[in-house]
Length: 173
Image (tube, rainbow, N blue to C red; front, side):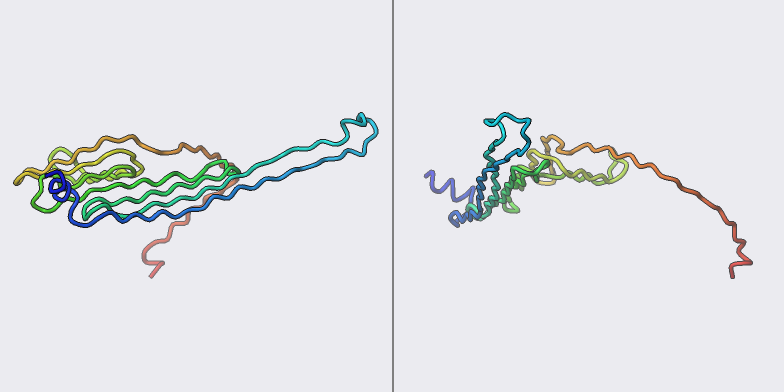
């Protein structure tokens, strides 16, 4: 009975997941020798161990016919700003099902113009869950998310000069 329920939710296919990735670990030792006689004899040579790690993982695939997975994770120990992880989990139901779709991870929201929203709007860079339900002519979309963004300020200084030249239509033709 539970196998029949799982087949109804997931579809008839099995799971197909692919994991790719690499990890690089670099160990090094730096020895510095000061030839300056002002240093004590014991303090002329200093050593330092360093370790650097780079990790790159990707998981993608499907579970059944309806669940799709796409995950990316990259880190590097020498980067000040690491690349953001990409997380995309989705469920796509059949046309006759009440649950049409469920998206988790990196989502977007687009609102079409209506009586309550004056102009179409789209928001990207959201992390959360987005669901779409349909029961007859009633369609419901719900979003629970937080905005993932970075704030950056730049200041530019320089000299500029603007000149305006008026050209009459009869002089242009």
